[in-house]
Image (tube, rainbow, N blue to C red; front, top):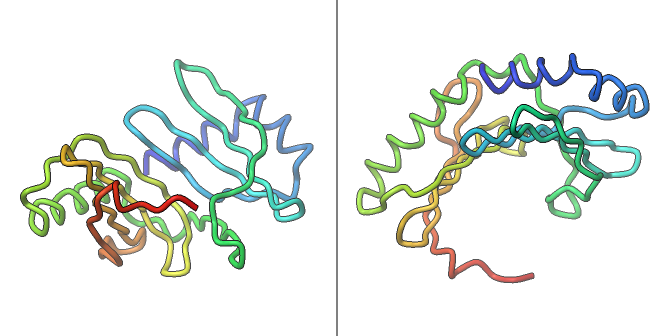
Length: 161
């Protein structure tokens, strides 16, 4: 539960305590991890904005509030710590094992994950960028490690909105 430890560590800092005293209506919405970089996002349902705390070089940075990346007709769901039964390393291993089995020709270049609560359930949303400029997206349940979704698409297939 290393990602949760990051949240616990953040929530004990003066930076977070000062921010949270001014933002009592926010809830933990996501944790993003890529290599050693971690970003923890808190959603304010009153103004539909998200505040992200970044960890880098031993420093905590509070990023400016922004609009969350979500469909307009959907609302963000809070993370439920009680539903996190497997840790991020286990989820990553499950995703990598599936990628090797189902997409054996694709070689991993970079991987990132977002712990979030979606309509399909609370998941580790793992994206593997391959050397062939494709992405493998795998959603692993935080409760039991089951793969709830996976697909492979070329980055050239992404459409601009």
